[in-house]
Length: 406
Image (tube, rainbow, N blue to C red; front, side, top):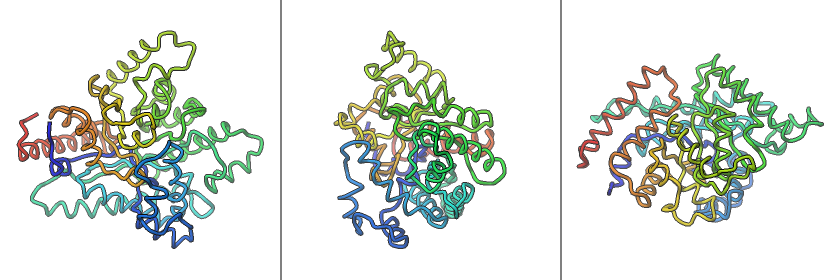
């Protein structure tokens, strides 16, 4: 079915998998680097696209290399606030009405910037943008759903002291701990801080995440951290199945109580199962798919990102999202990193529709699932009302663009 870019931009959308430090404006990165005396590989947008933020990458490591530069310029509260503010406006400009911005606060912490100060800066930027966006919206003849946001705190699967001043200090005070022990300690401390700040501030923390390379860094290492946030009623999402097989997704759900799965790209790849205890990989995958479907565990699909980090994936026509739709899984289309992947939510929807048959009903379901399965900050009754406003607005736009009621 054919959908115009105008329609895809107009409909209310979400981005539930959106990394703050992967979604800066190029011009802002250059300006902040100059201010912080951070030497970039190039001082022009075109030069950075050629050397760092490329249209395509050789592998995941090359894809992640650019974060060294973005994190380097985000070591001050005012810079975090600015980038968050711009990110909200960039999303609103293409019809995205709800975003969940995730990042690892420990990459920005140092003696002059505490955990709470990092979170407060990002929240200020998002809150200020939200208020501006909604103030303008009130004067519009078309009453789109208000713009809203949440913050997801991200823990790292692995530990490298050089990542930040915080990680360097942690390694110094625990000189006899190995990398896995330090990663566990860091994520557990992050979990405790997340609960504390969520409960004693107005910062809109809505979830807890685990990111980083899966291979050699199992999610089970962070079980204590996720048990802690689980017992304090914080929603959870985990990067899993991005560069590892179905077992990683199963571990995220069972050990970490994950409510959503980030990427889930390799969900259907029984050939990637490595445990000798799993004697029937195909049945294991079938059972896992049924469990995910029955429990409406939403998969945060990032098409362009997967294409860029998976050399064997030469066309999005071969992406597992086709299987996800065939199995009627709950999915949300996300950007992952607007800068690193040179994308928007609208472009991701265009990529989906270009490479995979998507009916009018499926498209509406994808959009609505994004709102329904969000970690919405407000009480459930208000979330239901918000989702209803989204559905009503979507239906109105569908009729205006000549689509039958779905």
